[in-house]
Each structure stands twice: as structure tokens, then as C-alpha cells.
Amino acid sequence: MVDYWGLKDLRPIAPLAEKARIEILEYHTRLKKIRDRFGRFQGKTDLR
Image (cartoon, rainbow, N blue to C red; front, side, top):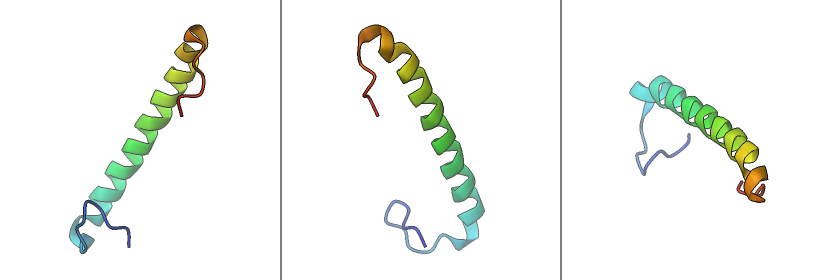
């Protein structure tokens, strides 16, 4: 099991944690796309 923030047993809120994790991943993906789009204008495409 993945150790979130040093907490070992998150079984009761595991679905919530998973949902949050997916949302964070989607947010980062969106952010990366925006960065890539604007990064071209600034000459900074490697901001991954």
C-alpha cells in the first residue's frame, strides 16, 4: 500500500485518497499542457 504523508493505515479513506490522487494527477497533466503551450513562447519547453 502506498504510504501517504507518513500514514500507514488509510483503508477507511482509501477510496477518497485514490480519488484525490487521480484529481491531482489530472491537475498536473493539465498544468503541464498549459506550461508546454506557454513555454514555447518563452523558449522554456522543458519544465517537466
